[in-house]
Length: 538
Image (tube, rainbow, N blue to C red; front, top):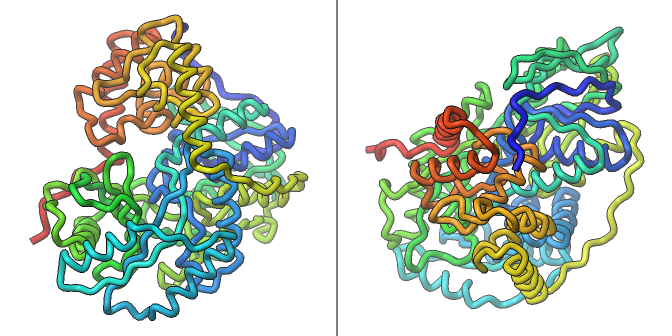
């Protein structure tokens, strides 16, 4: 297996389109432009999907709460895109039953809730169905505490690892001719006579700086969009982004914990989720105005207390204490600047800001958006800059039984090709989808690539090696936090880090010094992302 190059060079251009920002929005836009035959460069300061994308609640939803704010068009778009993702990426986006639990003090009447759910199902083209888990949860909530709960059921979807979805879109952009560069900072968009000339960039791994010519630049930096405009001397009448911090906590599962997602009211009446995720429970989210650098966002002790108290209010009999909080993490939603508006009322739809109104042509900024609608936003952005993009055909979802049969057949093929365990074969299919056979062939001839990355996971070294060679992973953190995100698991430890680094390093030809350097950088990045909970607030 060849080792990675010790140096790399920046692309020279010129490019027809430069996309700045490698979150789900930026990668989706780059993919759309490249598929249309445009010479496309994608630039990301850190790693693809390492910002707001990886700090989301990881659901693909139509936006039930948006109905309350009258955003019917956004709900329709979201439901359509949810259907498409379920059909196109069934290994990553799965249907998930949601149980809406409302306490006795809710201002919403049962009639209002039933009508909202009926409208939501009707817009999705779905029918109400009975799920015994709704009655079971209602009985559990009623028996656990002093509060009376009404429980309703609806269907949405979950993408446990949007990082993997971004990786797949990134490979499709690459295959279409795009040039993606991570760990590359855009210092400024360069202008000439009030028109975009290109970008000035710095490779953060080599220190190399370069100017790249481009006809059009799309600012998809998310919560950092205003910073890029300011560095480029592009003056807007008002800020574009009004950042809102969303924090989550991760809890262990417990006997009797919900098998479905629960959408309930927190202690202050705000909505929050308790979602099975990665063999754990994901609880979130908060909505707090964030005015500082988005890179510095971290959950405050009061936010962690708020989420844990709300969880205990919902499940007072759960045998979990403050010390059981495994991690907390936070990200900044790049919502439109809306001074004076309540955070919950600010639209979640994508807005395209053409800087021609700021007397700069050739520059477009993306404001807002969410996981569910990233692909449709990308089509809108491409059309805005003059690219002809066809609307995809209507999605048809195969029955769940057919999907499970397909996964089982594919896993059987992988066992036969690579000689890995059935557990590793199924894990490979669930994260790699159509690419799993190629990864299996990579592992076939080298026993080092068939071993698990650590004792607690069925995922194998070949997946990480493929990430470096085909998915533009550059560091150990790129591989283990995003391309093959085993380090988000409940059992990950320092021992796991050393085992995985040694195995990957051996396959890629890393020196002992490089292995140790990668371990140190990985551990620092993971601890910045997954924060330990502070001591309990008294």
